[in-house]
Structures are given as structure tokens and as C-alpha cells.
Length: 320
Image (cartoon, rainbow, N blue to C red; front, side, top):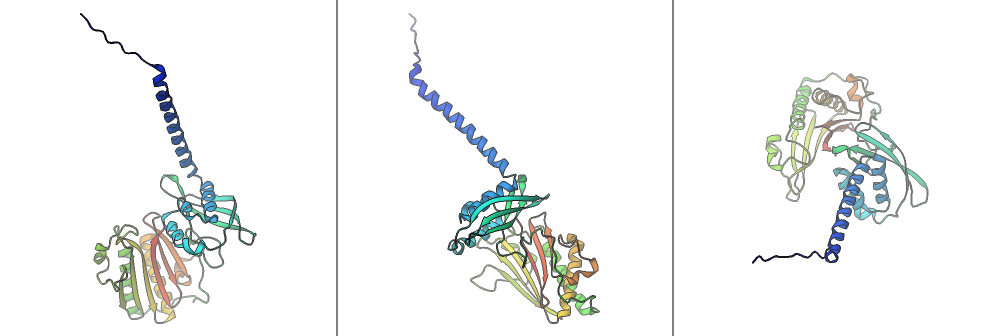
């Protein structure tokens, strides 16, 4: 005798399950489409500027961070406490954008706390995947200028700078050679990358550097030369990762500031190419200028040399 098993399909019982599956499928497709749409919008510097500035004017700094590069995120975090006490601004519009290969400037209109219309010239950078990110340096613009120094082609002559260099003493030349060779060795080292280099490799970079203070993670070194004293600070965070470098040569006589600035710049040019803000500078007249800038390791780092006549300052910092 054969036993037959019959399965009865109850359409009414399975209909709610089927309906839920359809709703879930449709919502997941919708989310993917929204994700793709959001991704596409991040390829538009005007849209990114609008999202950033709306959040910034409303003092929603955590939201604004989403549209910034790493360096600007840190800038915003440092502003949380004191900026939140200031009156809010009112975002109005992104008026226009000037777009270049690696960066863009967007002009954002807003109304300040006095209800007066203002315009912010916002710098954006093209990152991996053609995604645009705001580079925000509030309070770090050139004096009297309305744009970030990063990418700026502007260069400033030192007031009353000499027309030519004085005859350079042999000892100064040898001292300058030692300093520039050290700079080039450090900045050209493929492992010495801001945001990645770890503290344990410090002595391969500068065997004289050491931690001076128990409350600081920085390494410092100091050396005296015939015409200046060189102080160096290698800045590390609590995770022992390099966050920046600062070198300062305090010169004993002003004329030596021009000489050292010129010799360091010539050495940097040979290795890193011409500064990106040097279009208007004659090669033999580097000493007449206040500040020159290079991008290193792609656009990941910015190298800066600055002359204030009493000291030559060299900085290496994140540029992303």
C-alpha cells in the first residue's frame, strides 16, 4: 500500500512574508541608489561646499567634519568649545566655483551675526576616487588675504631685502651644506611620512634627537653653528605617530638669514623641484622672498621654508 503525502499551500499565510520580502528588496535597492547618488554628489565641489558651510554656520561641527580632509577635521575639533559660544551665522548660497585639476575655490555667501552679507573663499581638494574635500584653515590665511595659503601661488617679497647676496664665508657655506643635507635626507626619506612614521624609527632620522620633557611626546635636538643655532622638533601624538616637523635656525646676523634661506632653497629645488608658489621668482633671487612651499610625496605633505630675518623656519606638515 502506497502512502501519499499532500502538501497544502496556504497563499494567505505566506502572503505577508512575500510582501515583507518585496518591501525589503525595494528598500535595499533604494538605499543603494541613494548611496550612489551621495557618492556622485561628493564629486561636485559646489555640493560639498554647500553641505560643509551649512553645517559650519549652524555650528554642527561633527556634520561639517564629514566634508573635510583630515587636517581640517582636527582644526574643527579644536574649535568646538570656543566657537560654540559665538553667534551662529546664516548660510545663503554657493555663488560659484573655480575648478582646477587638483583643487577648487568655491565662493560661499553667508550672513554674519550683524546681518551683513559676507563671502568666504573656500578651498577644496580632489582626493582619492575624485571625491572633493574642504580644506579649512580658519585664521590661517595670509594677512589681508581671503584664501588659504595651501595651493596659493602668491609669494611675498621681504621689505628692504638686498639686491644681491653678500660674499659668503667658507665656514658658513660648509655649515649650510651640512644643514641642507640633513633636511634633504629627512624629507626625502620614504618612511618619514607625516601621519605614518612611528617613533621607534626616530634615531635613524636624527640620532641626536631625544625627548626633553616627560609631559611631551615630541623629540627635540639642538646644534650650534658658526652663524646660527638650529633647533628641531619632531612632533608625535599619543600613539607615537608623526604629526609634523619644525626646524628653526636662529641667525646671529640678518644678512645670514638671506644666505641660509637661499642655499636651503637651492638644495630643495634640486631634489623636490621648484616651489609651487614660485612662478614670479627669479632663480637667483630666492633670498628676497618671505616664504616658499613644496608638495611632497604626491600631495600628501607640504614643505614650507620661511624667513623672518631673525630666523629661518622649516615646516613639514600634513596636507590632506
